[in-house]
Length: 242
Image (cartoon, rainbow, N blue to C red; front, side, top):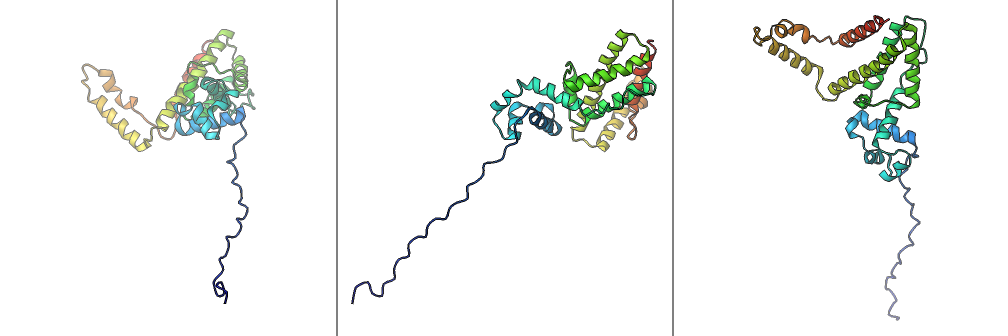
């Protein structure tokens, strides 16, 4: 009998089936617009200090070096971000037939709302002159409204500068509170404590602080009285320059 009769034949390994090739991670098409959009997403979440070219590159899944074909530096990126935010302000219905005071207040409110919606990016407006296409459009509309006021050209020019400061400073201040993680109830408790502190000061040394402690720490959660007061003072002051 042959030696191999009854032995179990070894089964060869089957052939390896063709493997599905893993697709590389899809990257968003790199353009100046996608870079700015990514930067604004970062500032919305982490604030202006969180925006770096490397962080933006990570957001887009590209190398930081590749961004330099579209933006020269963080400063130039911030300029583009500011112009993008300015483009969110709807001025298509301005100027209109209302008194110029009402129109300019409306424009300031819209601008402030646009900046408040994007973290502390308003901080970048302080000491910077936006000059992108959207910035030029906003300035043109603002000047058109102000020129209905019969103010002199120089007063109008000063007013434009003042309005930019109002919008930037007010929106930046609001962003500071919004990103602290402190709830409104906690904020009210602090204000009440601060009022009591002012009231406890020696009235012979600080008679005015003690007397106005309640007014100085007044908070209205339903209406933005403080901002509206500022608007009225500024616009009424401008009207008085005629």
